[in-house]
Figure: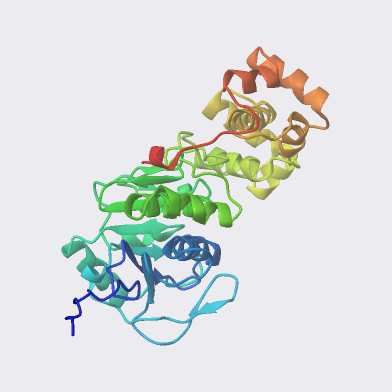
Length: 349
């Protein structure tokens, strides 16, 4: 009888393989659900082929010191999947912030855990107001720190020795990464997936989520905050203007919200910016409109409405008076067709 040749056992895809990207999440009390869900779903979609959601190429854990569910700012609660785990089990530990004025965000055990992550040289990521938590733990000294334009005043008041960046979507400062929140969280998660898993996986995640190709971390936040204005009352007035683009408030209504008279606000604005509140408001809307023209494929009419102008013709007239060229020329100068495509490899802080 002829001897049967030994054949090696067939390769099994079920053999344990170290995931390319391992992420631990720490959720603040009243955390922002969208920030967490965008991040974890980007990982989920990149982790497996198709839509099978097996944690193969990426793994994640939601950590907490106690088993009680963690409440999000919208009321939905999330249960932990692990206790506070050895930091070296992760490539990143992500702190998801939320409401700043909804009580204590994290307890002492979590602060101590984040310091252990720092000692173990595990990169820490703060999304939404997670940058506040890292700063309170003393872990952002001498680091670049990205903060939402919406919260830059709160950050400056609490951490006067730090200079927040409220212009970018996220900032990669080596073993500290901070993100303003919102849709930028998906861009940051895709950036990390691209770094560890690959471009195809990152693009797949964003496309399944019905998002465009990743924006660079250095891309401007929509409605950037007025960090350079000296007078706090004028900064608050500008924040109100930023938050009411499509339906502009009257100057008197803004003044009333600030506990000022219209005349007082006029005087303060002229002193701080050299412009009247109405002129400043119009320029803010025009600057935002120009950003939309240069970075999106929205129609001129849609942009006009989004920035509070009654129609496209009126918008075009005011835009030309402010910038010296027509809205369509701004789009042509930016080289846009239907909209920008930002390669993921360009996404850096």
